[in-house]
Image (cartoon, rainbow over all chains, first blue to last red; front, side, top):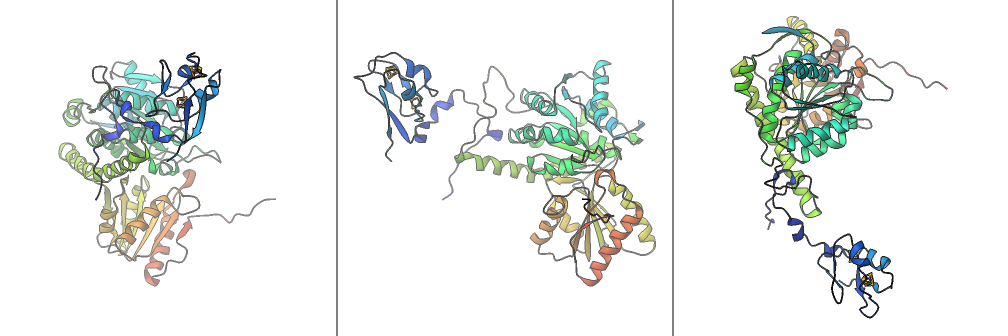
Length: 89
Length: 392
Ligand code: SF4
Ligand code: SF4
């Protein structure tokens, strides 16, 4: 059966903030994992994440709905508290 | 009122009559007079529009896109290298479905550098999703630019009005210029359904992910194919109001012709003279001049040439490594209709090289020979080609 889809002319989007619906977590081939023992809550990863996928708090968490697995957080963490591990399908 | 105008002036006057609101302009030979004239009109208070002196044609089209998206009528003009430079933005204008209108004074493309006429520039961007209309004379330029605003805004597709550089852009002939109120009654005010508005935020130029991109290309293609109806419809409406009717193509002596020449642009004018002479001598020669190249009126063409014994395509461009751009579409249309008519592609008039009556005679003779024998031989021929040798 053919999939049905409603699309606006010119790919215009008339609903503000709709990017939220577009979950980019599926792009990930590696996932960042925070070692809460090593984490000093310094906020470097939060500042560098291009996808706003780090959730501040005690402990820090990662929003895997949007994290694309770029690895920037792991690279930037001054305490090597983030590891990139292979994403299993 | 009848005025003596060159093609560039006819284009500029039509844009003024259509009350364009934004003119991003960058000069290039041979279209420069279009944007010069529009600058005059605005400076003299004859046209209420924003004139943006941009730093390149890429920016000219970018500004047209921005203006059209904010809900105003945008117009610009270009030629050759300018069209090449703005080609990235051509695809954006059509992809965003913005009804920009632009005139292109056809000129050959570097290298070698040439400012003279051929149609390589616009043929090279045929895949950009723009409607492309080609004009035979200056009256048709004025009339087509006027119609283009309606066509663009009804279909939400950008329209490029092409006319031969120098042959039309710099040659003056009598042109009937309609009154402002007549044009106002013909062209409704600009409207775009998604005009940028702070009270109704929209995203223009969003990402097309693999899950959607194909559908957007399909929609754009379908819109272009459907625009055939609108082009024909607007050409008729124009005829009713102004007495000059236009269609997707023009047929001249083609109904009973054995040999039909298919072409575009000002060459149609010269061909009519030669065809008249031949017909007076009892030769059944005809012409089909395409006015719309994109969308390509394949079915209409087949209907017009279907009874010919042989077809010649005369075109001022070459899709290097294949054959002429026009020929490709003609051949596809014939084969889709299962028609096996011998067809020869004549590449001619490149970089303003004159196409003489003798050249046209040889085209007719060679095509008649194909009609008699039923054999094409070499399908691609360079008209008047000199015997070249590579110099060491
Ligand atoms: S891997 Fe990249 S996207 Fe994911 S949390 Fe780290 S910085 Fe953000
Ligand atoms: S950069 Fe490292 S230490 Fe700092 S908050 Fe992020 S994970 Fe914790």
